[in-house]
Image (cartoon, rainbow, N blue to C red; front, side, top):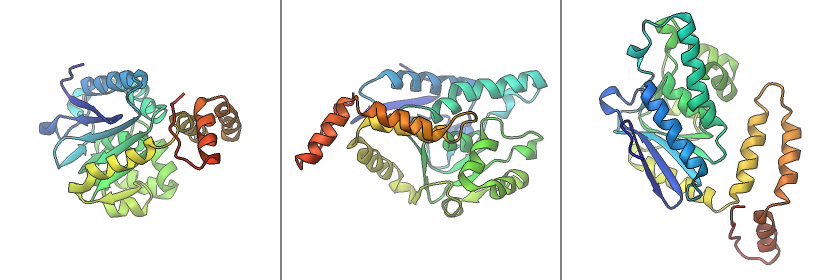
Length: 260
């Protein structure tokens, strides 16, 4: 499928999605959110895609925020719908995606950009990256999951400070806060993410899908993460991956997981 705002390339089971609006510092508008949703929806069903990497074009920005010009004159009802639609189509969709999603943060990740990165399963930042949720400086709050995911990652106090002050933090501070998993030089970011994806690909994608579901359950209201873990643990015993994994271990060879 051809897109106007993103680039999508599959290589060795790794789908790299690049948000490609460099003149707008890759800001998210409605069309970009829709294209990301459609691309991920296709990737969900594509058996050739096993890991997803999301990044931004150029060296300045991952995503510098939402496209404010689209909603500057919205009513409260329209604003509520904007938040709900965005979370449903993209941010929650990414967080609950059954295949690993890595955010490769190359430069600014602000507002909706940081919210997208936080929705990914983990984050790798370039050393020039800067992150923040500056929404209160515009008279609004983070609306794409930022008030929920930031405290989960950095703790309540730091999340309150970041959101209330609207300040940016650099990559090393983000690493100290546990907001990102790794910081690498910008020139090494793509290779590092691909190497991380390659490590993931050696393992059972069925098991990883179950692990994603179980981990996420701990952060969802009304769900008991331990119960979901038990359920997914039991489900794994019925997969061909489990048979292959245990057979390989017992026979002292490398597993070749069929992914089912």
